[in-house]
Length: 320
Image (cartoon, rainbow, N blue to C red; front, side, top):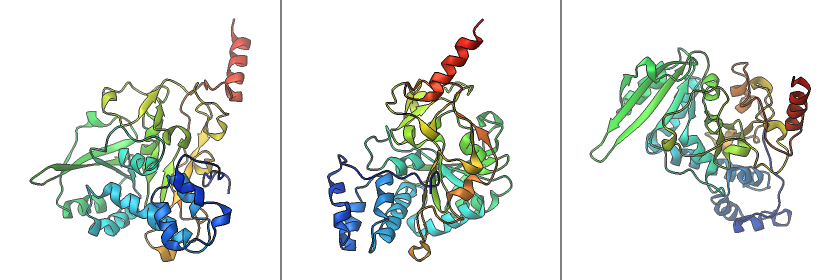
């Protein structure tokens, strides 16, 4: 299903564990598949789910464990199921560095450092259940001043802190002025355009994000905390060595039918598993929650992309 789940054709890979993931290894026992899955980057994990026997459930289990591990510093594992249910009830999503940790695990590049907080966004007026849940987990909250809101897409930001004898854990809850999706797309960095919902991991620009690189959104205000970022900020995509395709930064994209996004479906229950990204209640529903038109930049710098040629041709034609 083109555009719903981004898949990658099997080919040689530096990870030695991938050598047995070939069409000649279809009868591998589930315990071996599970061991292999622990070392796969997320795109390869999707590939593993298409192998027979227990591979689909193994892949689902592995992705679920990665999400649990990523948020465990902030949400106890015993409360994970409740947290995901409240995430669904608030029409919300996990955003920020924690999402990139899940996306980049076992990949060729890693975040510069571990996440220092957990970022959550909810739809407008739906934050009450999440607020109550976080307080039940020992967090105390305070509303941040309006100056902390970097976009009109954010209505309120609350900071939740939980102190222990050794450390303080922080969760930032951003309430959207509309739907959670608008908060994901209002960021000044393309690497932050990713989210974990109750049943999907969504990445709007996987080509750059999975390389731990980020373009700066044209017109975005300058950031004063660049040194705190866990990804590399690149001036443009001139170093790309193949056509941009659906992920060209100069292409206007529409969220209801965004063919450039990578969507990895996951489930709280193996019994509910059907297939990756093929059911209606998956990441597609998150993208359909609000019709938005967006792009990263007005110009593409990739020599292999036809959009760069078109831009230069237009510039020459319009030049006085």
